[in-house]
Image 1: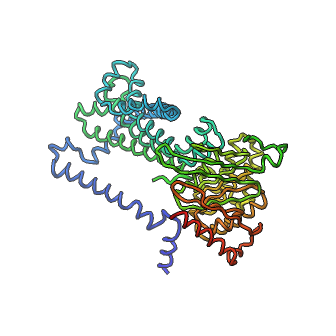
Image 2 (image 1 turned 90 degrees about the vertical axis):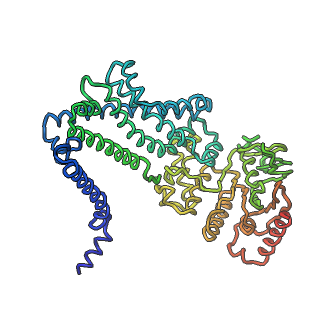
Image 3 (image 1 turned 60 degrees about the horizontal axis):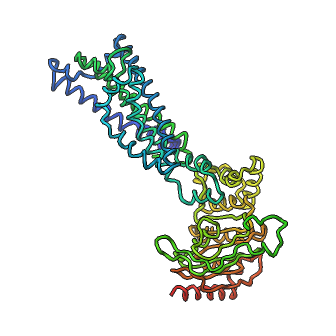
Length: 274
Length: 257
């Protein structure tokens, strides 16, 4: 009889019982292993004398119990999140418009695409301090750093999407003497959406990194999460630094998953995303 | 000339829907795709072109539809209502069957009500009623091709151009679609120019079979198909049918050599 029940459960909806364990088991196991290794390094290898370099997990997570630190981390996180979001949005708009322009006119592509590549090759760490000199407003200066880093995937993915339309689809429209605008709006843009969303996901991750890098150069006003990291770093508050890094990482992961979800909702019905 | 589709046009002037005269096609890389092709498609005719792959059959259709221009000779089209069915179904994957069938009407700026109506008729004609809200990925290859046919039918074409539309389908689906096509041909009274590399399909569908040879593509022989329309599917098993298939195959082999 118990076998019967098991079989029923196995064949029922996915995410039930054994299937769920199969899904969550391995990553949870790895998580436990990481925590264990972390403790071994901190408590056994380094010991209480030197483990300020590598504080144990309980100390790191204990940081969140201190109200002052907690508020510091979360307000700085929010400040950075705003920069990342606005930066990503602007990068997406510029990237898509730029790609459409390149797609509409060959000469625009020939004359400007190389500069998109150049833009992407700029060492952002070197240029960020300069931007702080040029743009006085901290929010916008950080946002610009963010845009610079997030722009290229949007441009290249959108352009790739627009240009990867099947030849026979183009001919279908050509036979009806469809205008350039109609081809763009009814064929190229819908066909490009999977590529655009793929670009958006990459750019979202980069925007988070860009915002944090931007933060490092602004030590006044509401500190960004990067600026906070730098502060903790200079004070050797390593537990706080670790906690902040964890928040930043979680932010990046959430953004990645979120844009994966948005993509699935938008094009998942007709496009097999991996 | 191409706009001579009004009812006022005299029957004699529009009787020949497509008229190829000494058509030559040389591609920029020097390949001669077509050489001295004369071909007409009249009202009431279903002309099939058979030939080996790469013999320029598709180029013939591309010229007829205006997708390409002949290097020499004239290709005269006496109607603007042409349907074009591609080798694959060329459906837009983000559109449902309904929206795909409405596409061409949409591109002609028909109102929503008109294109709904046109799409409904076409979908009923190809037997896809009930699948309106399916996406192409949810359909079989045969159903995708039906959707593609329905899409072209919304144009109410006088001349239908088919570029090996059933080539990728399995035998059973293919035969069924052949019968559907014949039914549409008798019902909707369009003229057809059909490209295929299957001899029996060619003989079964057409009123006239044109045999092409490869490189450069030229017409080597033409056969009139005497069997009456509408056609009985069992005609495929008669000696007369077999004999004609034999003749066409023979011409094909000779042209090939």
